[in-house]
Length: 243
Length: 227
Image (cartoon, each protein chain N blue to C red):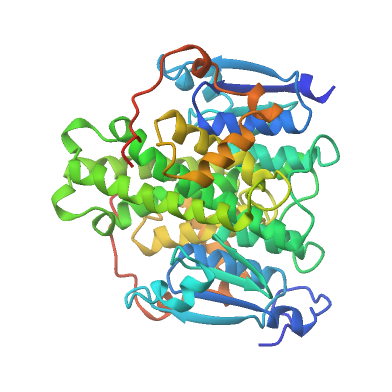
């Protein structure tokens, strides 16, 4: 891939090709954490990084290749030359700090504006947990330990959580996202929002989240890194439709 | 003075609150206003908290007109705003920085694994509890402890989590380590973690922010003594 701009991107000096070539990402499709790193790499004009798509279903995230980079056997596993950065938010922070002056700024200059970016970013990890506890309930909890009451409570917690985000996005518009201009907060949170709609969240009941979802769907970095299987399959899952 | 325009609402015996307090001390921001609230009396759900943090969670932090909730966000904000005062908490070198960020976020997993054991009864209503679940959580914590023992071995004695300097990784992870020992982690089974604990427990920022009720009251139930 070349580093010339996608439609809609202002043209910026191309990053020396070798910079991205010394980067590699092991990733899995449909994983919000992997998606975050890919969005960041696009935003920082680091297209051209090496990447390898692995299959969670086949257990490839536990393969030797992954364990050598990430002893936790988790994806994303990211490498920049000799530097390894696992944990998606860590990789995003590393990339933004290392390549601050190229591509799009993902952390604003003023500490007061940074405060909101950092806060929404961290709240985004709570959103991830609450989504996972519903969408992956059966994967996380062995059959003999499952309770309808537990799943019900997780759904209620998730519903409250989503309503918080609906409130945070009251004034969402082009260029006005979670903390003003597109930022690391959106990098971390957007994949979760896309994930939620993939699993049946009602746009009618969450109109601001739906607007956020559709506004950013067209952003070049997001379009370029959209999970492949979501592009080709219909929305199949409806576990969130009643929230 | 900057600290005078800061207010922290906190609770004793909370890792997230402790992280924020260590960061404030490290950045020489002693003198900040603070209010100790009681989780037992549900004061974290009181109006004064909800006005700053609709989640009804502690810590909540205000610096002038700037609100910052989420302990990691407070730490990142303070380091950014006060980079040139107190101790530098984010290293300059790319390798150390990358390691620091990674350990910080692994620290969230570490805290969750700890909580899944010591807070099991708090999180799970009686009718939904299973011995098999608690056992699985304990096994998960043991695996996690093995990872951190490994990380500390690799760093070498006297080192911090991300290298030769104390960093944000230590700010956010040390409280979890302190909790392990508070809840009875056995001496001798995790020597590197013990060494790390001993290295840091008398660090001024940590000593100054040590949970007050740990100094006075009886110990907790030693939920971790067998792991």
